[in-house]
Amino acid sequence: MVTAIILINAERNRINEVAENMQSIDGISEVYSVSGKYDLIAIIRVKTNDDLADLVTRQLLALDGIAKTETMLAFQAYSRHDLEAMFSVGM
Image (cartoon, rainbow, N blue to C red):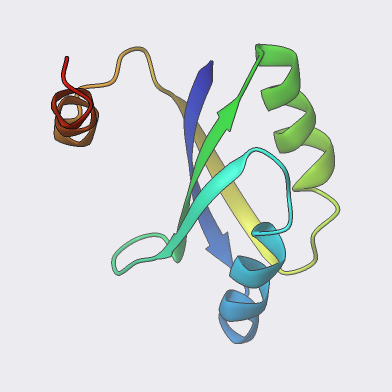
């Protein structure tokens, strides 16, 4: 599984529209509107690097309203949620 975080600058009057349209793309598990330098953050979970490349260079490019993106590839996950899920099933 490949996990990536995409930081997104959207056209000001289209932030909500961009976020809603991103939800329909397979591989995008979450989209957050945020404060600060970026308008949106998307969490991507796909099977392969090729799937990530397709999502970033083809599918996101097809969405109107995205001005700029920065993609960060996750190397390792450290998540309390994962630990809680393991303990809840008796591991």
